[in-house]
Each structure stands twice: as structure tokens, then as C-alpha cells.
Length: 247
Image 1 (cartoon, rainbow, N blue to C red):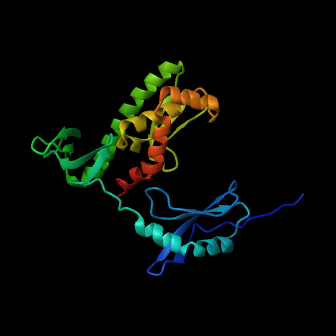
Image 2: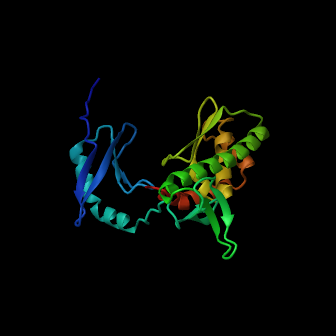
Image 3: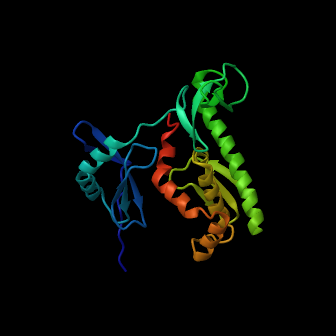
């Protein structure tokens, strides 16, 4: 029986894009069968997946062959949008402008400008705290919406969940553990309501089947008949939700 060893990889490598040196994060994946270069949603730093038997030299050579692709992709990435006064962000799929409420204390609230009919998110306190307060508001709103859907869906299928946790994950919109703990990305509250509803249905369906078998999809589509449309929206637009509030 043969054995092989792999040397530890550095945290990152660099390649020359012509006008600057570009850092690329290295991540070894024992299940990967090939080298894969990607740019994560909401993060401008490329990540290179290295297979179990991969090595640093091959990783560097692979990255150097992708220079033209990286130049094109990084040059076309949309700008990130900070949570600051006058920024426009989607809330439940509708663009809202962040504005100061003019008060030092109070709670963040959704309003509509009486003159322009523009949807607003009014925030109290100093503008320096807008980012934190915006995230706090969105997390609270996301949990409120998700709890309502999860309660309705679990009643439909006659199952119980253990808890609901909100995170800021980039690789998945939700998850369900074997003991019924549900986790969701708070950024779903920026998507249209039917998208958040679908993700809630998807994770609740895992309370019946933890896999993605035909039985699972039958439960999921019973809870959310718009499953395929929502999946298509997330594939086409989901990465844009990760461009907000990266300060």
C-alpha cells in the first residue's frame, strides 16, 4: 500500500496583473480533483482550490495561466456599497435610501419620503454608526421574516426545529443540522420576499430529508411552488447581495 505526503501550502501566492501584484488565497481541498480558481461573492480576493496531491509550483503555474481571465473578471466586478448616509440598498427587494432620522436616540425604521415617495431607512445617532445600525436592523428584520415562514412551514409538515441562527455566510444561503438547527444568511432580507421564503422552505424541507433526494424536492416544492424560479434568481443575482456593507 503506497503513502504520499503533501507539503503545507502558504496562505497565498501572488501573480503579476501588469499594473499590480494580485494576491490569491490558497485552499487545499482533499475532495477536489483539479485546480479551481474563483472570485468569491462580496470579496475581491481570488481563491485557488488545490487538490489533495497538488503542490505549490503547479498552483503557481495554474494561476499564471489565468492572468487574462483575472484581469477581465476583476476589471468588471461592480463596486461594493457601504452602509453610509444616502447609500441605496435593497430591503425586501425594494431600493431604500439610508438617511439620518435627525435624532440621537431611537430605533431604525422604514419610512416613505412624503414629497418624493422614496422608500427610506431612517437611522438615529451619528452617521459614523450607520454601518453597524444598518446591519443590526437588517438582521432583526431577516429574523422576523424567517421565523414567520419557518413557523408556517413546520406546521405544514408537522415537524419541529431546534433554533434559528443568522450568519453572514458566502458559500450558502441556509443550512439545517441533523438536530434541527436552522441557519440562514441575514442578507436574504435584501432579496425579494419570495426568495427568502424559498430558502426558508428549503431548509425546513431538510427536517424531513437531510439529502437532496426526489422526496426532499417534493416537500420543498410543496412548501414553495416557486422553487425553480427562486433558484434561478439566486444564481443570477444572489452574489450582488454580498456587495453591500463591506466596510
